[in-house]
Length: 260
Image (cartoon, rainbow, N blue to C red; front, side, top):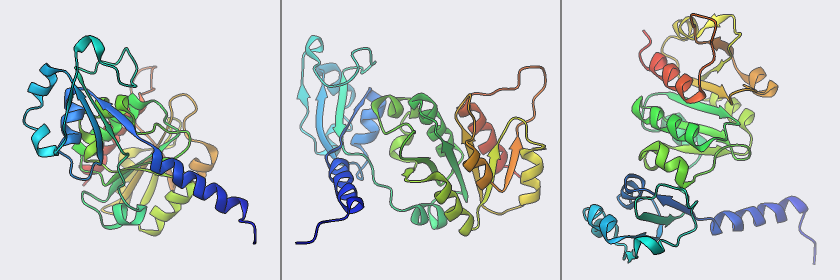
């Protein structure tokens, strides 16, 4: 019997791990949105009596049988400091489909956000929320060194995690090349860039745009920077010119959606 190549074994192992992965969402808003999402595979709902009353509209529609627990015995595997509001839901991560399916002809404007090693779930959640508000097709991040789907991310996203495609890809630079092949112009946000975002968007016209943002501090990695078509900056006044990545994403999305 021939031995399987190492890469085949690793791929099968990753597939099994992915199949076994579950996420605990918490908080009334995040749990309600997940309960009402038919695409979300739901496994276990743990709620206090008060939370069950607040979710009375969503629980019957979900088909879930809730476990009603005493608020003092809310024993689910989430951070004890989490503001769960008496509601927690175990789910499978969402599957949005391929990069091509979502970005080439998916719903929303021909606009996507690429996040280069942004690991803070609160930042990613806020970016997802802005991406939904401004109608972007997807938020894209590398599978490693990015914020995974978690309860904290879902709570910050305020429901957007259930509606805004969040694609985690094996290699961000490769995904960016694929976006270029689909017709997207790749604009990397860099504080020291020569041209402004507005100037670049004026040159781009009505072509699809991918906004590429890096983590605070290190910014874009060299490979990511080199893969961009243009490096652009958000103009600022005064001596302090650094924006939180989620704020920069919101400003950039607004500029891109209102260009022309």
